[in-house]
Image (tube, rainbow, N blue to C red):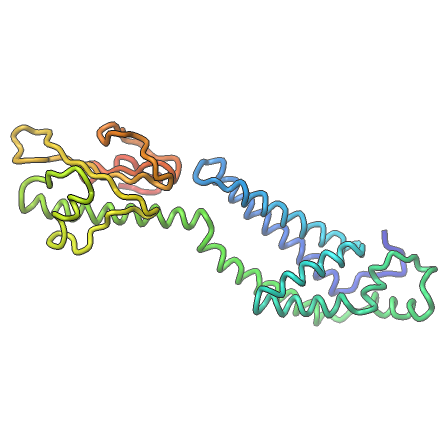
Length: 288
């Protein structure tokens, strides 16, 4: 508990509020990861824990700064030293924080000493620091912090686990559609589909006439599976086919391709399956 002789300067108030905002941001990110974890879309347990730890650190840093406890100043100094690595905005913000918090007056402001224990000179210094009303440094700190957070989000969002997994899934579906296009063109010429049972054999048949560069692996780097067969005895040859991706897990849910039933997949780990040009096993966002 701080005594009545100490008042919180605008700069310290700005730092405290900034830490509360950062804590809220980490908490929101943790909630996003938690929703993905619960829905089975991804496994983010470690990331959830890290985000919650960071949210807790920034919350208590802000709280201790707000009540002028020295542990808040120490924790803010540690965070500022770490922030030096995040050039340019993090570096500039950290330099401002370090310069301000290392001033003698700031040390007195966060000191555990009682008012009667200060010397006359220390009381003058403490009063000067406590009554600072200039907002210039505080405003600059908030602006730099905002730019720093914007930069971090711009870097993090495109590379976040959910975004990356969705990108892999979309690439997989796009590649499967390319194969469908090649098979349709082949069927127009031969009135049947290629009589093969592997993606490698299919690649040799469709390239380069029907597909210049046929995809043979999905977005996660796993090889597609392919199988064709004849259902109608009157057909010239194979009239049905299946293309399948093992998804993020890289492990097949069914040994035989004809065991797949139509449905919406619930996880990035689930297999994606196309039968005769139709996605019979697909993510919910894909409207086929």
